[in-house]
Amino acid sequence: MERTVPKSASDEIDLYLRTIYSLLRSSTEVQIRTLEEVHAGMNSSLHPDARKVMPDTSAFIYTSLRLPECITEVRSVVLGQSGQVFARQGYPDVESWQQVTARARRRTTYYDGKSTLAVYIASRSDIEDIVPNLTAFQIEWNKMHNLLRDWQSPSWDAIGDPDSPAFQELRDHLGISGEDLLRLHAVWGSTFAVILKKIAARRCNFGIRLLSGSLSEYWRATRMWWQNIERHVPQVMDRPVYFISSNTHSIPNLLTGYALEKKGSLLKYLESSGNHELLREWQDLQECDQCASHENFFYYALKKFQQTPEGATSLVEMAREEAAHGITRVPAAHAFDIEAQVVELSCLDPKRFDPRLLPGNDVDFLRSSNAYIVNIDYPLGLGAYNVLSKIAEHIPEILGVYIMGKAATLNGVIGDVMIPSVVQDEHSQNTYLFQNCFTAPDVMPWLIFGTVLDNQKALTVPGTFLQNANLMDVMYREGYTDIEMEAGPYLSAIYEMSRPKRHPVNEIVNLQGASFDIGILHYASDTPLGKGRNLGAGALSYRGMDSTYAASLAILRRILALEKRRLT
Image (tube, rainbow, N blue to C red):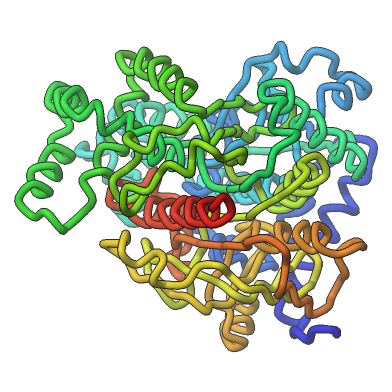
């Protein structure tokens, strides 16, 4: 059955993507400026003021967080799937370059210390994320350059002080609000004045080159990633598996209790760190027992502590504790910046579980379990299809597939949890109908700050920039309220795990009756009308982790219940 979704909703986005790939077919470097007009014409919800003379600060902040800090020195960006691809195309030693990271995007990236950035891509979705980010960054940099190049600054050094008259003059000269300039200052920190001087001194002019875009190279890169997991935990090849796509912290925290054992040390750290705001939150928690989760607070505090030099030993100790209780961390390797954790259920100690995790005391069944949990740090877009397809190829029995990820919401607020039963996938153009194993009562008991919205319809977009008001208006009228990037590719892989053929294109696909559990939970991290303010604002507070842990608890409680039923 063919689905019917208005194509006019995404004509500008389709044109943008066709332009990107037609340019990247070139065997030489192409200039990002060639894409600026079609990028602006897309009217992206994350870059609505691309054509205006005045800066779109939200778009600039969003891209600054998703590109490495060295981007201010970069002139050329080179994309490839593996070290072999780079070597064949004249870059034999990229992995000896300086490895760099972005604060809000996981991707294996190397900088030559001069002007070239080598970026490993795991799927087509990486291209559809990198190119719009570079284009938006360049547009906004050059806007600011045009405003600053002839400005006689009273003092470039004083600009770094938000309380100085120079900072206020800068705000007036750029024509942006004081709030937006303070947000930009918070992102750039101590380099604020240095970056502004660079912007004033020169235009930004990125070149980009795609070394290989072949599907076989993506498959090869995925195979290398999976082989790394096999080397670390070879026994997983012969066991039934529950697959989770989530993050690197919530599942281990709930299963090992490490953070909860370190309450005293973490409170001492907070007292000595000078984080008065978080200490105040802890005092409020003690006075108002039900206003937030104590456990979530310590999970958040542990993460903050481990980011400090004195917390480095805690990372080693935590890894040792996890390994002693059946959790093997497999670090990211090769092209994929995707960490995996392999959990042997029979080795877990229920006494160490988060108290919300396992109802009752009937835990003896775990000792006789032969199953594993494979939890991965969620991939980007089509990388999800590649990863799950590869795992399904090598694992004898998949008992359940559970996806937890960020999404934008059109009918909720940040912190809500959305449970879809319909997913419109803009990659395959399929509309997937499936039985989500989760409903609102599975999540609601663990969610304090948000609301659980089940029976939702989700839209999987190719990239965060690749959505506009026209698309959202049409899809909202069709009842789609949940916008994200991975559910569609995962469901395409699930189709191939339960059907004897490749997933179709542009059809209504019914996955009801799959032989294993399918669960998708999305927590709202953005409202598109915020023009990127929410996604660009930085890390979640411990209150913001409420929805993350509520979803993780629902997933683990489901797995433990299914495993008990399977064994007894």
